[in-house]
Length: 419
Ligand SMILES: Cc1ncc(COP(=O)(O)O)c(C=O)c1O
Image (tube, rainbow, N blue to C red; front, side, top):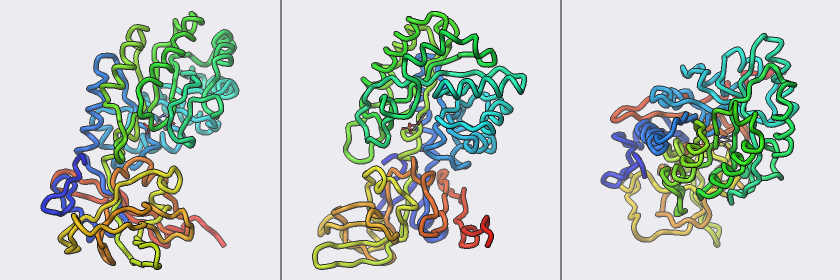
């Protein structure tokens, strides 16, 4: 799996034995591969090189400065959904002029900060938000570049929590409202319409919904020639699939085949906002087995990571491959005698379960397990629930590795509280 490979029965990230990281940095820990991040970014950029494309890494999928810094160094732009994410991009050395900013509830302070930083454009999600951006930009003596986020009402056939482009979802503008806005643009003298934005969901393991959404956006532009004249960019958002288990994930080139010809024919430039497909398989989470128990019916392996550290299985029923990092350390035969096991965390919730009835070797206290494909919506969705300090993050580069985020302490847990 990418740069995470077993060499003589021991899991390596690039040239580093991950067991060494677990011993020295402790567990739980997220381990990122720099080579994978760079390869994935390049693969997206190459697949879409047939058209002027700005690849904006979706910061929400993984906002760690160390990761943003690697992607920035490779020439990547960024997509943010809050003032805090924009702050992170700036801290990582990113250029705000290459940042697009979505989100249904941008506050006045966030809009002001984004205008001060000079972002590339806001992805506007309602008429009220457009009025507010227009008001704030006017007060600041600026003109705000915007894209209208359209809700194309297409079904990306993904999890109900991650579908965003249907009318039942809170995101974007329906075509009727978007039409009113573009017919009435002189009412907003402090904004300039530069794009249309169309994020439909995540992950979208099919290419056709992108084509369908673009076709609807282009029909909209055809019906509104004044908007067509100023719209330079079509932004198709993120959502490219990721191989977690055995799903059929289209290649980047297949998404490109669906998207590029349409955008090219319309004479527009393209913006993409991939997150998961770049960082998802660029990290594993390592956790150590605390206890093992059998209740007469089931075998449980209890690890030192909980749903607060990796919430995707509890939140989205997501699958993460789980396997011991070392056959040698455990001395167990991992090819035979697999046992149906529930891998669970220590949190006081029944949903704190990473894997149900998973065939696993007879792992026991002290063994380290790798949770694969943990890079996207892993650390970034973690919390301190059950007063558990957030875990450490490590970046591997060839034979070397370093901590890019220190493990929090109990003191950190209460640092901002008063009695
Ligand atoms: C507006 C927007 N852009 C991009 C993304 C990134 O999606 P993904 O990580 O699936 O590529 C998301 C995530 O849901 C999003 O809401």
